[in-house]
Image 1 (tube, rainbow, N blue to C red):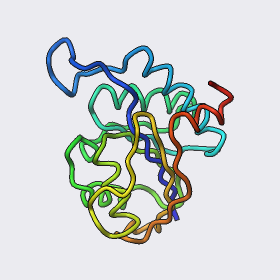
Image 2 (cartoon, helix red, strand yellow):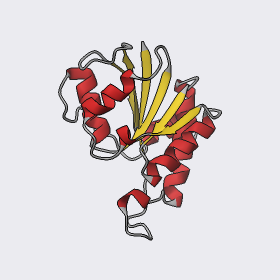
Image 3 (cartoon, one colour):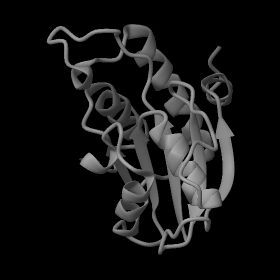
Image 4 (cartoon, one colour):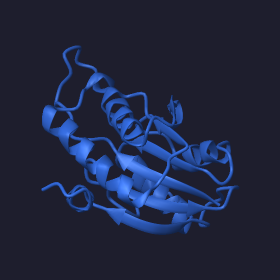
Length: 167
């Protein structure tokens, strides 16, 4: 079994300086929230082996913060988590990760919700809405087939911050 921690990126600026959606950065408030959420997630997840991020800047910044809080596990950017990718492609990417590891995926909505729907129920539409900086933990067999996951927990940012002792 592998454990998969799914995290939506934090709050980002409305428009990037270059006008590209992928260049949007976390706001200062979004960065602070991601930091405290990551601290709360650390109380529930003792170790991460890999943090994988969408290549979008706001997701990369979120993933870098998560990686730092978890003592710098392996970190990659992958097009499999680019906004708009099919959940079956994302699940297929998970097949390639080593068995028995804890992997964090940092991405976007509705993609993460759709991935949860596919992993839990075999349907590729949203089963769970992720607020910005929200997270959930799935357990998956190593082959990561649709409808084989188990939802371990889901946390709003406020719940994760509370676990970290932050308001």
